[in-house]
Image 1 (cartoon, rainbow, N blue to C red):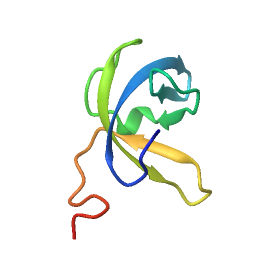
Image 2 (image 1 turned 30 degrees about the horizontal axis):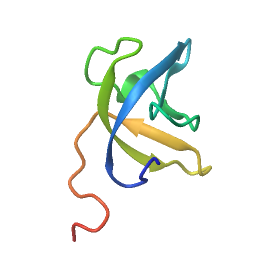
Image 3 (image 1 turned 60 degrees about the vertical axis):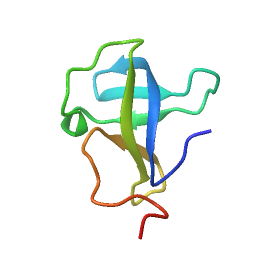
Length: 74
């Protein structure tokens, strides 16, 4: 289960012209990782640590940037 507001270790499921789609290995819910939010080299089928949050339209978005805080930390 993807945890919003926390660091998740997700599988790079597929790549499109607009970015990458990540998911947990045993789940079909995908999280979008825009290329501008990927601060490392991304390869298909690799596991990466990302911070997951909701955008202004309640879509799941990921970033490889380290947040200042995560849910429950403060």
